[in-house]
Image (cartoon, one colour):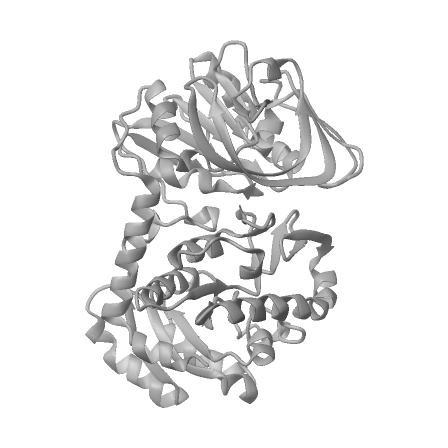
Length: 477
């Protein structure tokens, strides 16, 4: 189990790289994360949803996605509450304090999924969440040491030298956790080193001497990490190019399933900007994407607070295009109604009025992988749906796509505003190239999935070069 000294120390990337390294040694490998908190989910082959990081790790393992890879997924809906997804299905929505009481009841599902993966694999590589040093959360823990103790899994602690204080990160973790938890730690590694790693030899030796833990190496910063799908919207790298087609995505406060952006960021003819709160929509933007949201009405209010509703009207008046995906599609309509209070307070919110459609929130969540045909380009593509709510209205007479025998999405009468429930469309190389070419962009020749596969191989090479992979694998029980 790879645990970290804090959030965003590179656990997800380390697990993905180790998975690929182990697979290349002929092992059957599966990724596992007991509990994840993310609104960037992936639809699984067994009809559920898991965190996007585990989807990347499954790709590194050449495995189909299953709900067992991430049995507990928390999807924040407000600052104090999250939807709880257990083995791919929504269980409830709780506030943070209520979740602490719920956690002990979830360990059975966590261990059930872990044991099922273990029975089908030579090796399971587990990713922790946050840090085991958060000892105030230790009681009932299912994400770090609580899981490791229950499952009998040895732990490797990863520290992040890029943020500074890595010696204190690792030594301090040992100082605050219990002796029983510390006994599970087989060793440590240092991640994201920039420069000459030998300059840290004294610090590395100090950590070993102070903790008594084995060291598995110092991993230099992996510069291609940005080419791998991001789990956190803050990790999306702006790919701004002076002469590229300018695509702007609105950085909503509850942005969800933003993996739609990763393939666009890698296109040489696209200049992609994730717009942050308070920043106006640039006047030279060609396309504005309104992404998915875990709280559509809440994020519509957030959008208006930034003045983006006014900017969008001006953008279309200048000849720009707008694409709303999932929650963004719902926002583009005339009305969003939530009579049962599924996403928040009961009520109705006026939409942006850029599409003649209305949305009714319903308790049923649609989770499915989809093959569709884009109407404007006649390009088929694969995507997925992960949403609640039904949308209908006059502009549905001009669908964005067709799925089987049904129309999907809507397009405005002037063709400048489009909405769709389909995520993942830009991962399809043929569709992405056709959509960008119609907007005047220069498209690249390299396929997105092929790029990710190549980067995973180079990440595994990087890890093999700098870490003691034999020692890490020998730790496994």
